Image (cartoon, rainbow, N blue to C red; front, side, top):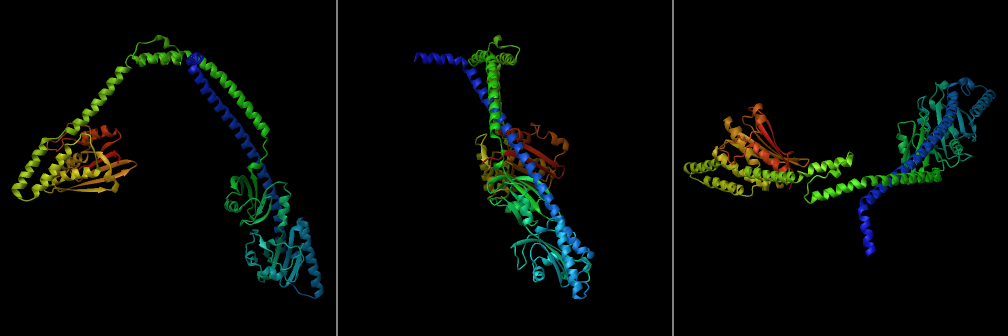
Length: 598
């Protein structure tokens, strides 16, 4: 036990140094972790950026290749639709069957040559030129006598035939042909009327090309292994995809269809995986090509990352601990002296100690301690006591100001009612006066509900209306029912209404209206008192809330507007109190702002 106590005693003087080292260690470790995290994040971000840029390049290459193929197909259909000389107008002029057969064979050869020249003949499922009962065909699929009917009866035929010459939007449609050797279920059709056959109906002279989806699947597969690539039409129909069976891209297609940019990349979640999507949209064909890059499949060199993070963490920790030990040694001694001096001050010894003063920052603190120690105790005690007494005295004095003239005037009113009316009006006035006196006799700093304050005000209004023979009316509007339960300091509204009667309505010599409006905004309770009296001139407005000597002798409470404002600021703080708006001979509106409390 003796050894344990001895070790504890030896450790006590090093408590600050130990804690400083511990705190610095935590700071150093935090910094090392932050630097390591930043380094990893930067490496990861750069890897993602590089992969994204590579993917954008691949998608651009894919789009360019498919655009070349598409332009070749469009060139074929434009050539066939607009250049009559290529086919010597087969079927337009009739002659003997030998000449017609010769022309047809020649035109069919031209169609096959056009397909071959394009370099994409193996992807042209069928090309058919129809002109008033004569059909010429080429492509890798065999023709049939029903081909014309199959094409004309296809759901997309009239829609494609009626498009403008500049519209070559591709769509994936069901194969319309009843017989097909290669069993291609869907095709991408292009259809245009023959311009040199303008004298006939468009449906009687047209050129048709059916593009096989194999063009897209072969191209996607040629972009490399393990690539997740898609080709889709403008309406979001997937033409072909590679390695994309595990993803649900229906939501993604909606985003790509509505994208305003023709190309770019964005990050999204697909089938529970965080992915980068790069895309390219073709303006004429409407084709959309995009690639999906799951972030989990990125090739990151984890060995390099771990080694770099370890080195950064090790050097940060070593350097930080060394600096922490040096700093703790330098700060330990002067801080111990400051601690000892503060212990003396806490015991009431305010004598200065020159040993804690020096030219560095800690010495400056010592100088300030010596300067403050001579007066801190008396200053704090005197100020706190003075402020407390001043606050309590002001509130008591403000609440205790009750002018006896009000009692005299009220008794005078009771006398004249008794002489003139000889009825129950005396009961009404005496009841109101009794309620007033009972409420005013309670605690000086009491808070009541808004409902109680309005009842108190109603008693006062009853007396004053009898006194002035219905010279004025009072209306009250409370925006929300719950505000009736809001707490306010007693005798807040009465002095404001009293001021409206004596200084606003009575001098005007006409019937007046006092409007009270209660509402709340942003946690503040607002009470406005508006009268249609004589108003306040601008020069009197400035000193109305500052001149505490202006109190009318006939007032009930003798509490003027400046005292009401000061009283509310003492209770609630300087941000609350009264504000005044007025226009001479028009109106005066006083707004009371209080914190909303229940």
